[in-house]
Length: 618
Image (tube, rainbow, N blue to C red; front, side):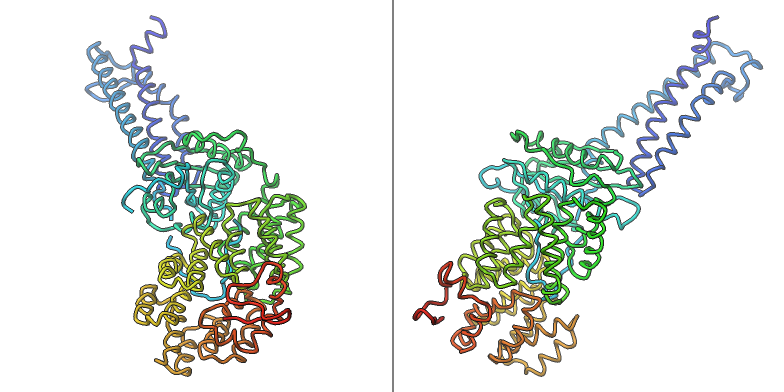
């Protein structure tokens, strides 16, 4: 009898087939449990190792032993009838068919059910930030299906990828992958991509995908997860067509960390293919650095920079390490420049202390990559802080010519225009910023204020409410303006109540203005709730303003201006007529060199010349 016939007679081939099919099914199920239970990456490798090791012993056992009605016995010790061998063969055939059926069922569930449910929870509630210090921000860059996007332009929102790593501190890495992918896609002609602040506003929220798409006005959503372990990374991504509620594709990429830029390109290519956008060479991306340690430090630093607040100190440290490891890392230099430029607003520090390092970082970034927007925005902001208004506005305009879809560019230019008194022109830029970044709290905040300053009081309430919902407590300032100017006090208090306890500062301000509480009672309320000394400084400025104490108010405004350059915008409230017609207004114009920009760009909305050396304001 030949070896092949004997192997067949002893059911070795059937056992081998049953073992392989069962092993494959166990590995697939193990892989799913690894994701679900957050097991280490080596768990599925260990399972595969034991299955491979067990294969040869299983075949040997099948050769040497036989299953009989009396149990398992050695082959040489028994006489087995052909009927018994046939019964064993039938049982093995049934086992193979059953396992294959289970495998097919699992494959179907994994393809159409698990793939849509895995990582479905993509976004935590954006923590409401009630600090009034961050008035300039974000420099960097539904139950029904959404309506057709503007001009039927293909569109996709990149939601922050979920961190599936065992270490929660790797959040920066998953966010970094999402943002790098977004930055790549935004350069594609014919594809509209909401910027980071809008997409990341839904991070951690259990918001329905259709509702996210409706608010971002997109037809497609990209979501996924990142798992990093040592030098290995697994990126899972899926693209959803929201209008049809279908998955266009989903893919898992297992790579060495050195290939992370290749993964970004692959995902972007798949999206573009799915959307059938004509691109030419738009997918070309230059690797930002060859130093992976520098890249990780950059991702961590940029992550903290985006969070703002006290994390800016750590962001500075990490970005400095990144550029030390790779002095030619342009993006890291650009982000470092922006980190320094927002230090005063968030940490209450004098701008003069950080002007030099910010400018050095910006200039280095532009030397390496003249096309970067971030360092140019830093230079424009520095020019404004130095009261070089014309230079600042010219720089912003140059950025927007080169990067017309740069929402932070529109936002910052709008703020600068508003400070100089160009209220209508500023409003147009805030509208552009919101159009590009429709759920960025900072954009909604300044849009609400600009609408109120342009006397469109009712229209200001909606973006003010949305701004607070997306973490911008200062948005409530527009409601205060609404109440003061329209005298619809009950309505103003209703809106403030709807905004929640995080806007108590502005509720107290309105009560003080109406005489419902005394200045001493208001001060006591502020003292009881103030999170910082800086908060108290803002209150001193606000209370003096509402009580029309020009000298005291102007003194605190100048003190705050050292770190928050936006404070001088108060002079353009309609309520500020009492100040604009006060002798201090002339001092204000001279101190902040506003006449330079007025002569260059024309007179602001509320002022006009009376002769060559003088002016008057409404």
